[in-house]
Length: 79
Image 1 (cartoon, one colour):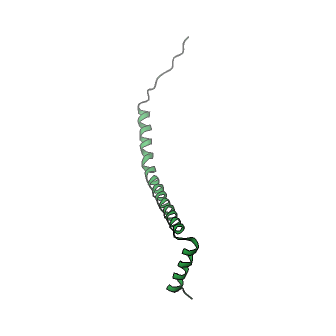
Image 2 (cartoon, rainbow, N blue to C red; image 1 turned 180 degrees about the horizontal axis):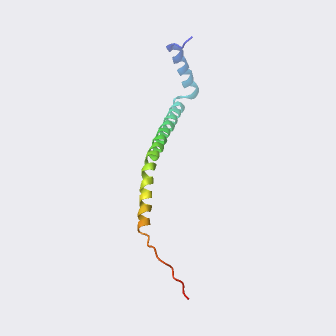
Image 3 (cartoon, rainbow, N blue to C red; image 1 turned 180 degrees about the vertical axis):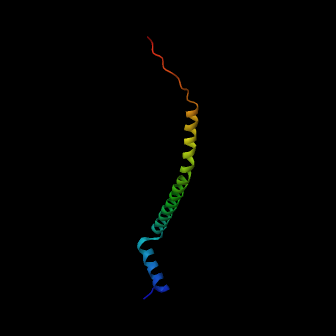
């Protein structure tokens, strides 16, 4: 019930005759580019997720520093 090497070669020849080698090459490069783009997107997503927790404490620290530098004054009204 399985495919033999002869069956696969005949199938490949039929596909090449129908689509042509140029079109198959374009399909292969498009598919490869899509896979590469997907992998790069997954890497960027994981890099952003790893960087996000590290960035949050820095922002908290800078707002805490700003709170220390705040000057407290009294408002006087003109009479």
